Image (cartoon, rainbow, N blue to C red; front, side, top):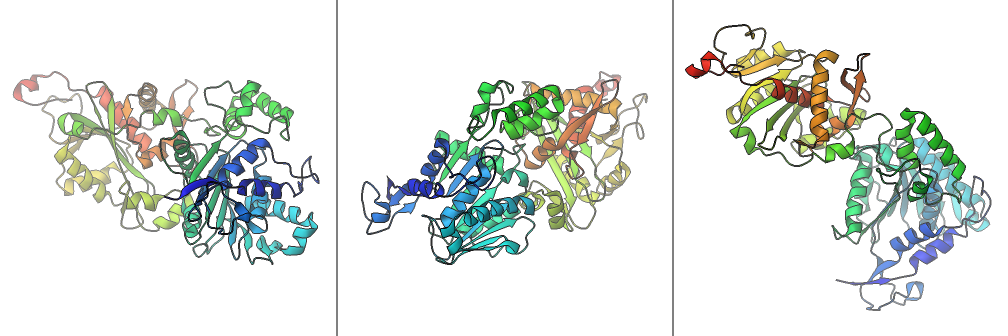
Length: 553
């Protein structure tokens, strides 16, 4: 393995940036002065190099006759609260690679953003800094219509890209800066397309600069979590560095002493009065608190009220025990979808410690799945390819696949009952009958008042979706989650449903599930709640039939 040595590349990058002028804001026209925390980050990224052949203990940088050292860090994750100078730093770094000390010949440098407006901000900052510097203006060509800046000396080009731009598969950036990656949520297509094109370069570099995403399912959250494990030493990966400035979620959000942890520029170019005003609004209006926590304290908190917080969901993320379902009765919840929605079946079984183990299954129409993925910005194809979601042929869900799966599960597991939303249950029962899956509907094929043995097979129990029927299910799930008495294994589709769930209240305080937006599916959580409600209040009853070997519910 090549020796790791320290170079002066970070210092040279910092010196270049400080020759630039601040393009706008209260410091417009003044020299770009990097703060200590910014210099530390730049040094940590650019200074470590490998002495691949020269064998020196100290890198000589530009004075090295061999010039064989290569930068070690390939990915930098920098997350900080809003208004701490992220965008000016992005622009300055891009110029440092385009015409500064990190410039190389014929390289492509991209700043990727979620939409055109965000991408334009980075380009505008850079263009203004160029026009304010005579030497830069003489050597760089600004192409406003394409959001490009071309270096005539090296042939390298900077381009601002948004996820709306087509034809990105042929791009091979040497330097890629992802601006506000949080806005992409869990949609990896744009991110993966650009990052996978960096392999042809000797020193590829990815900068991820963003305020935190609202939930664990986001790409940014995954990147930060990996980076933090690297920083803690849990993972050995010298190519990744992570710099997270956040106020801990359990800290007092309104104590100004805690704000600096997420706002390193506080009291400098970040006006303390601005943050104080945002805190006053959040404290006076509870609906604004989540936004304040996410954007100004850089906490992983959604801007709308959660039923299930990310931390609570993670605390129940242990893998379920599949053997438990073969040894003890389990109960199901089934949320049948409309034509192009998600269908969810969730089975639950309780262990001896009172913990409920969860096995979820999902279906969606397979036709136009890629288009649906783009519309919902959700990785349906990835889930399908990795077995987390079954895509049935056609434009609507074929309930035959659902019936077939229930039959297969019934052969391996003991499933006395499945609670269901009344939507299209007759269609499913018809498919189950056609496949010889024994089932009967409570209240239709059988009722509690009947005085005869229970029919064989799975009991399908109707479960309303209004406040009256859903409130007990909501309360049961809430208790189990807060007491960490669930084991769901962090199934990605179920986790996505959990991140979308909100609750509505009626005047009496009863609750039912609601979803964040039209594309935010919650079917898995609805099915889980019904399954848990079933398991809690549908228990075997003592009956005269027990003496005859028949169990009654």
